[in-house]
Image (cartoon, rainbow over the protein chains, first blue to last red):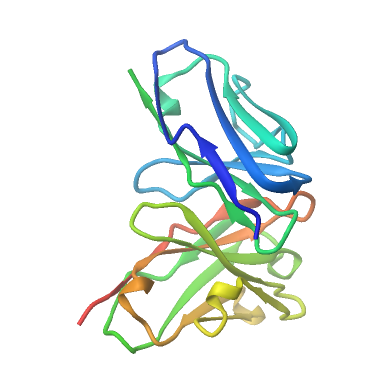
Length: 106
Length: 119
């Protein structure tokens, strides 16, 4: 099973600040997906296939990486971005998720 | 509009079984693999398994083999997950999620079904 380690576990950012979350895989993966989950709601696909934004996701979000190291970036933090973000790999069974990064606003 | 409508919350006693449903609408049910995901107490997400609604073939996370059974009813576009021999460790929110074909991302999710196991 591929272990995904996200860091940081919690991050607080000011409006307008750049935010970067990393996801480290225990073995090389081909693609990485990212999900956003707000309290009391289901996860939503946010970025798929490393860098493709899901429908409706603002352009201030981006994803990058390869192999065992992937990043999720918000160019300019907004209040509506407060949520927990999870990375997920599908290159190896079983699909696994990272532990999540809780994003708060200062 | 793609929608996955899950059944309501469940309260079960230890040792019992529960069957959760996920009714799909707005797309061709047999064209997309359906996944099930567990989220315990606001923690991270665990993949339980998936089912191909067209052929009925299933894949399970080893951790959930013997615990979860996935089935579908094509006539009603509904996926089911049965959990047996429930313990307190099974108390969680369970989601169904459609899997898209290219990157295997879970692109649509149900609203979640809360299962509480308590005597």
